[in-house]
Image 1: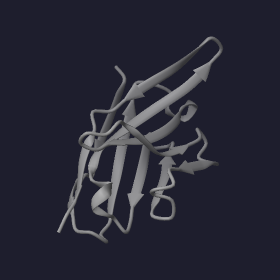
Image 2: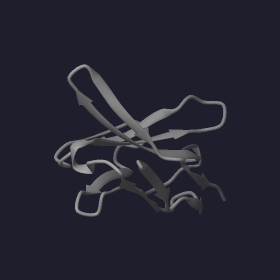
Image 3: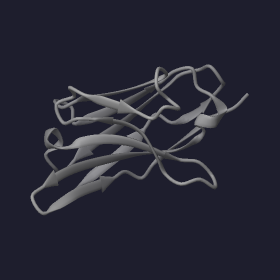
Length: 120
């Protein structure tokens, strides 16, 4: 069965750091682009960061550029989000997403989410 399991969320003070992990199983991880999304209360789900299947290219939302780093370890079937210089506005549930486009359709898988709270 396909699974994406996030971990590493929690409570951190402004200016602090967290590293989120997403462990994948049940599909060919190295064939999928991986993304981190987040959703804050009252707001729509937002794309935070993305990484290509081989990890050779990354993209970030302007709001996190320079502070967050997405990476992946295909040998461990895991994608990471290193979050530094955290701000209260980073508070959200963070979701791991896997996506692969093949002729005729797109495949998407989602994790259950992990809560990140930035507060003093």
